Image 1 (cartoon, each protein chain N blue to C red):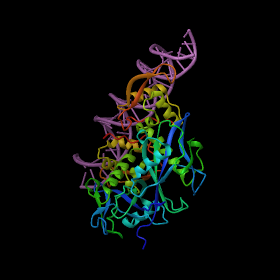
Image 2 (image 1 turned 90 degrees about the vertical axis):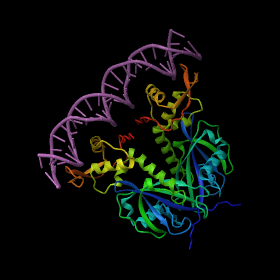
Image 3 (image 1 turned 180 degrees about the vertical axis):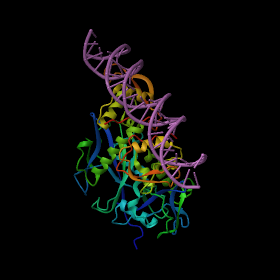
Image 4 (image 1 turned 120 degrees about the horizontal axis):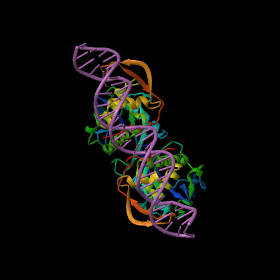
Length: 225
Length: 225
DNA sequence: TCAAAAGTGTTCTTACTACACCCATGA
DNA sequence: TCATGGGTGTAGTAAGAACACTTTTGA
């Protein structure tokens, strides 16, 4: 009797950032079979003595060369259709990572190439990665409404307008700059003013902020479109 | 080189229902090692050629004897700490199931006993099941706000007051019956009147409704407490 | 006729929308 | 001085909170 059926477990990553005014995902070109030469989400096998979160963080670091501390990382969901990997039975635990604009990543161990692509142009990825990417984008869109997650796309110090651009690009909808400003500056513990200003966005100098300690957004950001 | 580390994968279930005016979870007494004789969430190994969702549905049916069609079932998240199962490396994909009041379940294959316990009294479960149960309850609470999920706890035909009781018991907060009534009867496609009434809740006869086709609740149910 | 629960109407307040308007900088 | 974006004020509107009040049954 087969008491404990044998599986492999991978951690795959939906890594999102905003680049050139577009919501982009990190994809890698596979250096090995199966799907050799095709584009896929970064990821890899969970090691025998490694926690799932730890595996995701390690893969992220390997594929992006990024210090994990500056990136938001959360579990997305798991995918385990019997034939999703032609080699053998593989269950993947997908993670969602959100990062500020990063340098173009270096190719990693298993990846022949790596690049950022606008999410709407990422199609025909290997395995079931199209569906995983779509779920990740959907999760990110939903969480902007009621969490301070949008700040994860911003550099450490950012202006209200930069934060607003995140919402507009992720949601694909315009927001009124004046109402947005009132809303986010009024939300408790969302933004901490640094005291300094910048003119990098043009026009009148804008205050610089850091992320505050808020974990939810009360009231939520209204999503018209 | 160990290319594909070996894991076992289980599907564990957080099955919630409302019984005797309490939010209750299904727990089973383990008939086998490890944790033999202790209480745990129902679940079991995913079979070699079985999809994760299918495995969860099968386990639910085996443990509750319930036709899966009448139960809401969704993936919760995965848990894979290296030492969570003393036998070997096991990753569990947890599912959340919500059901109307069910008969007390029969003991299943691996379970010596099975019963409903109020969620606040379910403590010291085997493995990491305390944390999984807590995550499941939290997910259910959150989803009542912006989805029609509360109807999953109701029988096929139900009154507005019965639906309100669901909210009050899951959230542990009182809601104004009059505002609640206006709210749910006003929401598009949430409730379909059957045309008949009942006096089973006492007082003036109440209209009976079925679930409508709505998948989200607009505007969301305000959660004061 | 009374208790109990269903269901409606009304007032008050909060928070979103839309937009007029002023402010502070670089070119 | 003018274009550009930062930021404030304010009127109108949608929706939640609180609660008075009427309706329809069983006992």
